[in-house]
Image (cartoon, rainbow, N blue to C red):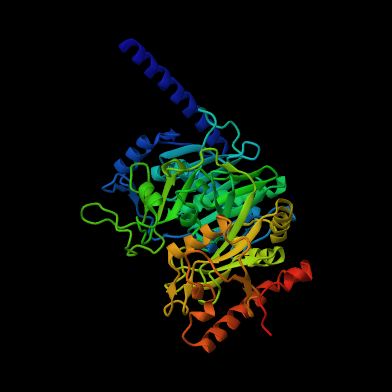
Length: 545
């Protein structure tokens, strides 16, 4: 028995050395010449040990790894760049800038030279659960816990040995900082995507959301060119296979609402919709944890309080217990964990065509209805509008107050192609697969932020359940005179007076004023689309006359 064990250990050592040699050779081709250790696809126990021993984080009382990413506790949208390219479909989202190739190449070479002096962690993963569309991704980092984040967030490689030719490579150097004046960038931190070299550079920031969203940006570039609609949404399915999608920006409830004990979770944030159905781009969840309630969110609570989960910027008590109610580091506290930590996840990461789609918005003005049924034209209008009130903490520099924002297709910062490409794909799929779209407000009633109250999660869940159960199929509706939305007259388990927001305000005139102000913002934002869309779509939005 001892001889067999020794033989197995010897084989393992030989394979590890072989893999390491292959990875180092591939790093050399990127002008990274490692002077220290290079670790390839370490197991979670191994990578956790590296992080703890290296002082990168500590254990919580439940065994989760807890790290602090300060001062970067959210994404840095103003530090994102796309390298110049001759692709005419490229679109620069708000905040994203073009970087000239010579400047990029000089910065890339400096960063690669710097990374050679660090211990490196290399992880090969997949993005896309459907084998027909999956991309092989390599993540090279100088932090052990970043490699753990990649393992949690993406799908495991389909091969034991290194990818011979990754589709995209992410180089993440938290110890490298740009010289803004000399390097032609805005700050020491940067996120640079080069679609020609299939390379992403991330520097200075330790916030793992940059890794996650860079891969999503890559998939938003690749998939539409294959006829697949990439979606910033969560997805789940019923035992009978009925699929539901939940669109929305950070903080609107995608993760929470898709985690339903009665439905299998396909994925919580990023998906593709092909002619065969829906598939998850990721293999894990990146959930907001601020004020998480184990009673209302038991599946997520169980997933984040165990070994293998990774907590970002969650304060600990003296007993190492996570204080999920504290925002002393940031409002944007996060947890990443593999989907298998969710009891009822679907291991295939795939489903059929969606029967229902929910557009989530956290309306801080308190004027949008909690639930409204959309026509196809309205679905296009609200998809392109992507309205919500962005909550504090999801981005650097946002401040303490939420802001009304319009994000194209509910994910503008991650869309590298012209919005019309995504909108056209969505309209065709809605018509072809007879999918019903709903506007779901998870924000405020009885007044705006600071005056009214946020709609409770149990009520929101009741609305979602009413739709998915079929109880809302034939319920009469009445039209909101300002937003032109069909509001259901009744929803099982929800007081009828709450369904129409103007009924919840103490002063109807104040409601009218706030509603018209938001309607005007919709109109102003939509001007950039109206010349390229049918009049039926343009006129399906709010009415301001």
